[in-house]
Image 1 (tube, rainbow, N blue to C red):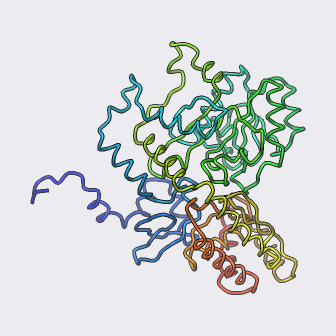
Image 2: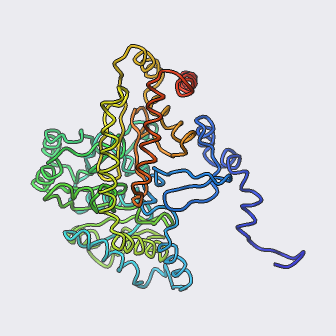
Length: 465
């Protein structure tokens, strides 16, 4: 850098000069409703740095993260092994994405992933979870020669047009028709599955073994019986493990909780990125890939411009190495059991607390109608304005008072979902349970700032109708 001369691009200087404009820039140039929403619920924080399971603001206060970037930060933020791998791959100056060679990193990452999926044979690398689902939908349709895919009510498989066609949440679908002619069934509804399969045009069933919205696991035996029914009708089972995969539920994949389940196609993403480079992967059986890529003429029939890029592959390899070295999956199961058990022990203590459920470090905390008259009248007021407001009333003081970032598990749901980094331990469990207990005590006292905030939410909900 020379005095008075061109200084080029300086990221540090740019952030120092313009970082304070972050909310104004979003309001002006991006999704204007995001800063509006954050201002409304008091989530308009300014986080300066992050490491592991924590953020820090400009005053040096720490915030516990129980969202993990919607599951992306499985190893927490800025894991040193993943960081080093990315520095190394950039410094290597590889001849990446030539499109007409075979670099080693994609093959090595595919080999590692398939080692956790012994019944599967090949991998397609894309750039996101929704792209992994799109790939599975295309492959299932082509391999079976059938047009229709079944999905489950309240599922979330992505927001691009194909994956939106198997998204079971109406709020995401409204206004984007026409979509693909796919059909929903209830999670666990084997009779519904049989009825649809009899029509003879079903290519596959795509299912999240644990649904992100509301944190509902597939009923015991459903995946195995669904698999048998599908194969009997020459249809495929697609497991969407975009959020549940890579240890989130205490097994490498969530479908592994049920013996005998071997999906034909498996979609992963999120945590595979290490939180740095977007990546998605669709794993499948040999015959499916051979049918899609049936000749040299079809070599590029399905591809992705940035798929298999060196940075993403290096991040994925580093993530899997860390998971093995640090026994991340076993740790997630152990810590998840501890957190879920301590929260479940509070259900009998608080009448507003209905249920605690989940697997591993994917936990749903559901609130329900209280029995006492005073609390019931307030609950009814909130429900009349908009379902989900009480859960939002819990989320806000967890952040504002206890510096813990959480989320409501879906629109119009009285459920908080916890998907913290898989690296958390007993200290983080203690912090969350202590804070949650204090928020519940305040809610059941019938007064204070929490219910004042509830009245504010009611006014806003009514105004937005």
